[in-house]
Image 1 (cartoon, rainbow over the protein chains, first blue to last red):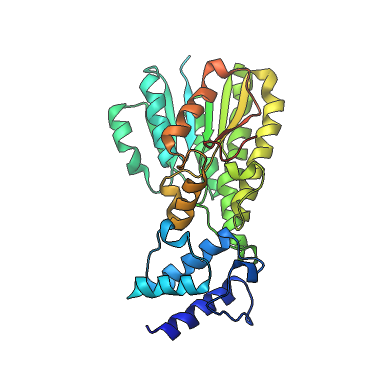
Image 2 (tube, rainbow over the protein chains, first blue to last red):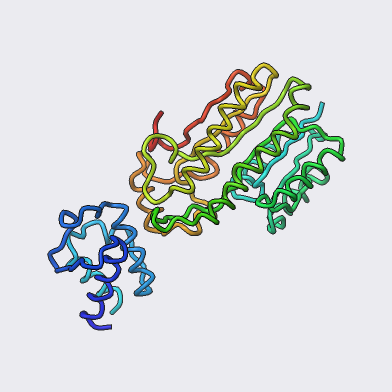
Length: 80
Length: 247
């Protein structure tokens, strides 16, 4: 799966989770940009990504994520 | 007089731990009616260690007719329960309210609420006549203060149990029957099988004690509430949370 495919899949997960088909992510998108994005929603997003990409996050891996770019880099690393 | 324990959800991790603890100090004549559903093999070691004392019943608590059969069988045995302990629930699912599954919720309410309503209706009158009884439910710290998002079904069912607890406590206090709950924070058992691991890890990290509860934390509190010396404590929901939920 290349980086663009991962980005598209992550964006789809965000759209589904936040019930917003118009949501457009950038690498800089962060929790301040999406009203409902709190710690629990972050776990929901990560859990959906675990299923989608057949990966497993550890709490310490996801704690320092600042934005979508960090998240994408982590997914790319774990799926490599 | 022997104690007669009716334990629903006895095959759960908490149920097995509680049974083991109670059996360790029980009199030889005490009887434990232990309900499970399709998993009674989990009770085999306890049955072998305490022959005749543990009487397992395979009952689907979501089926009212089967609950009634259990009630009839206990009645026909001539045993009058002294202790009722109600533990079962469907596993917690983390679901947004827009995806709320009403059928699953109805089944959970049958298991968590209606089954114990029927059991209490059947057994409490005789317990009241005997002037002694202990009733204990397991609730959740989610009903204390602000619950986590996406757990509406679980919180509603457990809150309904809390309502039953308070109502029974005042109605039966004069008959020497206490009705109480323990309310653990997230407890690491098979019950969490449908809970994402990240949620479990995050709950442990956020707990003031730095970990989640285990049955070994909760069962001693249950044993105390079931004891004779806890006779003046009723209507209580006792948090067992490591400080993550404080009344």
